[in-house]
Image (cartoon, rainbow, N blue to C red; front, side, top):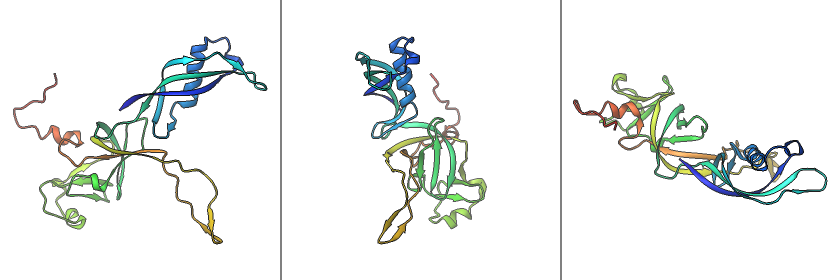
Length: 222
């Protein structure tokens, strides 16, 4: 889920921080710049792990800061494809399920990666799975007995498998015009999102598989 990425940059230390040990001052400045920032094809930066190296601080004309060329290792959130992780259901709609791991909310389970057969219940605002059902349409599934449905409720902890991650670099700006006609700009996408699946045994709400344990068989906690 977390990896270390080596990054190089030139970092300024303000005059007000000249009394702080240079290494600590640089770590603080790097965290200010990178923490909670998405780097394209790298992931979501969390915090500095350590400094690999730093050059001598140099003053640039006009600002009074000491500028350091630094190389550091950054803790980055980027689950790898096929990794299985735990997440919480943030919301659900007709297009799928949105997940959260607390500090990152742009995780999604689209309809294609839900267990089949499943459907979205607009009254409960939640998707449900109907195991062993022969129903093939949402209409048929919504006519099933509520007690037979296995809901994926908001706030529930689910086990998911990472399928793919996507990076976007949507530049902000005014709507574009084509042949004199203003083209409506699409909504900005999250700079980093993760597509997940719960379409296999062992995936989905954790209680599903706890209750599936045979009688008299306890899960090994050791």
